[in-house]
Image (cartoon, rainbow, N blue to C red; front, side, top):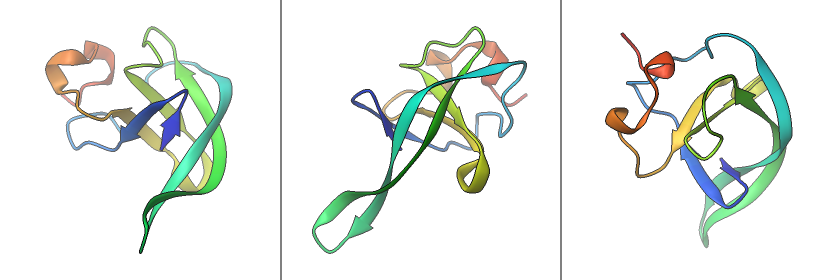
Amino acid sequence: MRFQGVTYEMHGAVMATPPGPTSPVGEADILGCTDDGWKVVGQTTALKIQGVDVKTAIALTGNYADVYVAKGTSPDDWPDTIRRK
């Protein structure tokens, strides 16, 4: 996923369901691997997780429902609210 120039990925140390309320903040690009590298293959609504900066993590619903964290970050960079306990 990519949103506002940040690439996000799923991570086993993050909760799969966002804690608390979310609110739509825009369209995220769905990235797919092709013979030419990563390409935008669709879009979906990005959701802000209450208390979490969108540059750290976003949530998605529908076919891509999950919490996604900014690529290159680690659990130490995330708020406690989204870390899997």
